[in-house]
Length: 243
Image 1 (tube, rainbow, N blue to C red):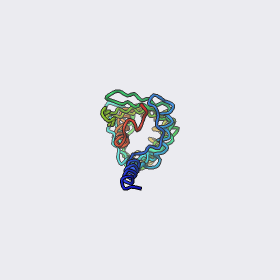
Image 2: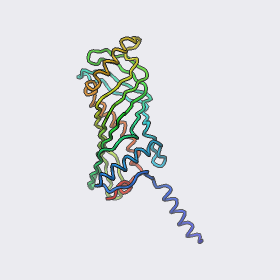
Image 3: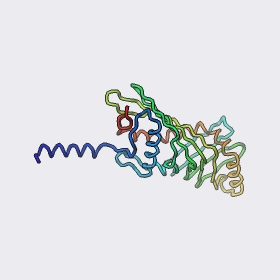
Image 4: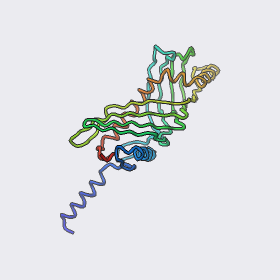
């Protein structure tokens, strides 16, 4: 084999070795059935980190810190902080719709994830009032959404010259049907009041949620934004879809 041919083979191997790989089929951007199936395979594959795309696992999806400010105009007025928090269940989601719209300047992705169970587990620190109940607690918690839908809407800037993508917007609409709270220390130093307040949360979970829904939608969008940025950073439009 000539030295020149050897160089060509080395270059080809390097190109394929360094091109990011997606463990999901490529679809025509108008084929929703294919897109839903591909997205589900992609979610399942991300139970393990994707080293080529520098993506950590999504199950559990680990967040160092979450801060939700108090809404002083609401019946639910308490500051929420979460540490070493984990979202559990996303790799098991059913993708119920997936829509792609492409323009010369932008790409819009809208998809919905349905989960029978979505757990949020970690450490919490709450302070304020919830419908007349004084909250001053911290410790381990587990908040479970049952039969929940997460609607994701992404806006990407498209470089028309090379089809490189850049994420510029990420919105989330959380739609649980019921919530279960395990919050054993809601009233610091008072186990009886803590248990009574936890019971109140479980009896009125959806009403409480709708008072803080806008804040949670916004926070979830901020949480997923950097992950999605890392996903699109090394990819071009033609890596994702047949146009």
